[in-house]
Amino acid sequence: MSANANGAALVTLFGGSGLIGRHVARTLSRRNYRVRIAVRRPYLVGRQATRSRQIEAVRADVRIARTVEAAVRGAAVVINLAGILFERGEQRFDAVHAQGAGSIARAAARTGARLVHVSALGADADSRAAYARSKAQGEALVLAEAPEATVFRPSIVFGPEDEFINRFAAMARILPVLPLIGGGETRFQVTKRARAPRA
Image 1: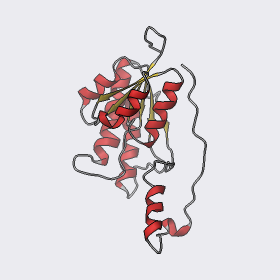
Image 2: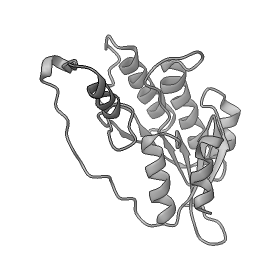
Image 3: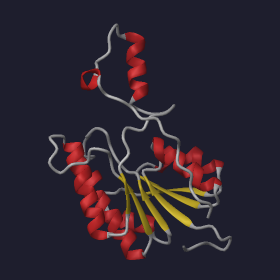
Image 4: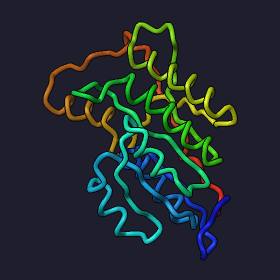
């Protein structure tokens, strides 16, 4: 792993302003990694970056290859957490989950960085859902560019700051009834947050 004069390896984290990204960045910095959070809006991680000298935020858009390449430069590890739950404007599933993932993998492969790609449970090229299809396409592009990449397929991630369970909690406060997803048969598996090895 490449490291600076203090021996701390650099990890570039795409999607570091999201729920998972914030926790991953904090955990890595506590374990003596330097963390470069690559996001479209660096000001979203401003406070997080100022709390730790190990964390910096840089502007990068997974849809623009040159910004991805700049963010990856010098990193020993690249983690891709970039994703969207809803399409808005230019933020489309295909652009972020598929083409963006491929761009990140290509940049990581060119620099020799280890790549960790976070996909989604249910990623399926034949799915009726555009979200799941784009996630499957992203996995295929990642593995084509970086065959040694580690690919995770988590289910819905929930916690104190999530945009899923908290949305239902807000609805429960004002609505007399709630929709039953999957006919009321949907289950959630609770698991502990993974621990990162020390640098």
